[in-house]
Amino acid sequence: MATWADLDGELETWAAQGETPTFWWRDDDTQACTADLERLIALSERFAAPLHLAVIPVAIDPGLADRLRASPQVYCLQHGYAHKNHEPKGTRASEVGRLRDTALIETDLREGWRRMQQAQLPNLLPVFVPPWNRIGEQVLPLLPQWGYAAFSGFDARPHPEPVAGLQHFNGHIDPIRWKEGAKFAGVEKTLEQCVRHLRKRRMETTYKGEPTGFVSHHLQTDADTWEFTEALMQRLTRDAATRWISLDRHIR
Image 1 (cartoon, rainbow, N blue to C red):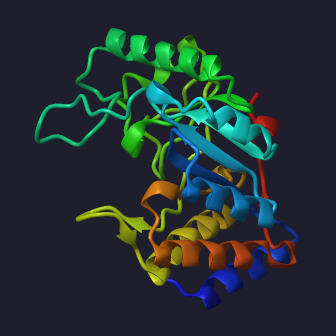
Image 2 (cartoon, rainbow, N blue to C red):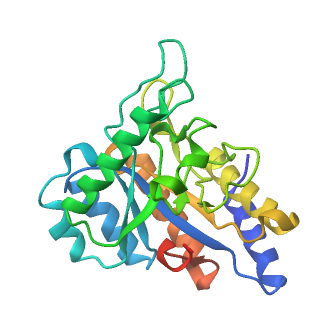
């Protein structure tokens, strides 16, 4: 486990090497304007950290686009289609898993993208975020054919080799513990995720250019998680210790 002192020490090591680590922020499960979404956007604006909303396309609230136009540093990504599990009982949940027919997956995703365009969401990027961060290994190589330029999962990449024409922007920090209901995972456990990925980037050339991803879920965020998120953002943005990016400038 890690402490705030461990995070400070890791950031100081980066600075001593003349480097500034990049971060990006993804939040999952948006469909409508809510008080929690407003709170999330306010945090993003306060810390000048671009926010990437993974939007569920099946039933986008008509007022969402108008609200987001007022916040130009908020971007929209596609979060599956209906956030519905299609894997057999007893297996891990996925909407785009290894056992579902790929033709059905393609139909859903194309319809989802059409709905996001129809909703006129601003700053819409061709980035696919699978519900539950799970995607079948056979599905991933098809994403470029379906119009996606990038993929975002969590931590480990779901395919053993890079997929031609598909960039990866994964999440690496999730402050929520999901088993038995969404609760704050704890300060030390969440900081360990952050410090571990920063250290990996610093020490392994392969991962040097991979931005560290912070993943939030505004609809499932309890008071302790909100408090930690604010504290983490304060720490990471203090004295320009890190640089927060928007994916629109990095997608080729």
